[in-house]
Length: 253
Length: 253
DNA sequence: CGGAATTTTGACGATGCTCAACAACGGTGG
DNA sequence: CCACCGTTGTTGAGCATCGTCAAAATTCCG
Image (tube, rainbow over all chains, first blue to last red; front, side, top):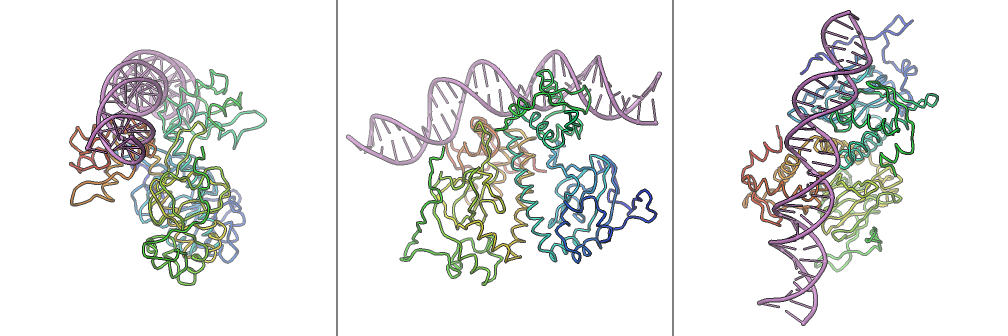
């Protein structure tokens, strides 16, 4: 455990190419922020943005790094700027379930909680805008619009979580794998190649779908032999050959 | 389907014993409300309470009645005052999963959504305080404290939902059943008898735990033969004989 | 090229679902 | 009070699905 010590460690600042001074979160800098239009802070006016930018610090995190451990005191939250994170719950014996993926613009960590409830791990080299939780909550107090936006996001996350409860309890391995690929295809299918790149390995796919690695691998192989997908063996590139049938197997009404 | 037409039907008002006039939601009446201290409206001052009570209408709902159908336009939400409701998601083929139970003081229905996402059904004879969604959202706009309270509740619900994702995907039938009884015992164990009354039948327990009725029944029988529980056959009364072992089986750290 | 990590494949077994029969309970009407 | 019937819960047999263990194949990266 805890191989990734000092996760939120020393405040080293990344340097951007051609930028001699470290990137600091000032409201000026926020205009260059890649997630400025989608993140929570998109709802802020200039005055409020100053409040938030004053407390935000940029951090880079390598893939595999754990940034929050379940059970630790909850002192930070952050906006994902680049990369991706997984939020996992696990039983005492170590069985694991990925409960949510966070992409650029999403918030990781929990507000209004004194203890971290979910372990958060980078699944790719990532960058995020880190806030002390207490300060973040004060900004929330001061900005009703940001609070409303957080409420809407939380409600959306709740809907998504409940939908996944149904998937995990009542869908077969085949349906889950097909549904996962289908959802990916909806989002980021490369139209030209008719293919997509799996953002996670088999292991993380298994943790996401509540299956074993072997079952995921077998179901992918079956979808290939059925002529629905064309996945290169051991690979992360996946072409969808028969979209309607994929949707049918996934059980999309 | 839809045997329970006119769910939110005609606005018949219940009469209380010894109360000749129908119960209307005025702020005066709110002082008599059984969930006044726990519901969302507990955060309101008198002025705000007037706003809310002006739009709230009392309804009684018999057990089994569906009050919201997934897919319908979303025009109402409500506070549960008495009884209990289940919120269910289901696959196109009809496999079902109970995603949340709502008890007195809880909010049912979804704010900020144009379509109902989850079917809501009374699991006991119930009473609720019904609001038009649009009007409820206006009250939310006007009362930051109520909005904050809703945010906190939604965050709690999200945590609960995610925890249940782990249960559904990674725990055995035995662990789930034991965990369910254990959680019940924490809440409403009758100290004198050392027993508790199951609030739902086997079918609903199965839908809650993501199991079949038969598996639930068998696991309960096993816990009985193991000397952990004393459940009368076909019954709803359940004594916990060995609390530590129940917790151990449930996998409580 | 070599070694580690990831993925695939096979064999096997346990878990939990389905189907089916039966038992217990609750209400209704004679 | 009791026979009847629908609902709910229990139990058994058989079987499909999926997890586990183990070994081989493939890829990645130095």
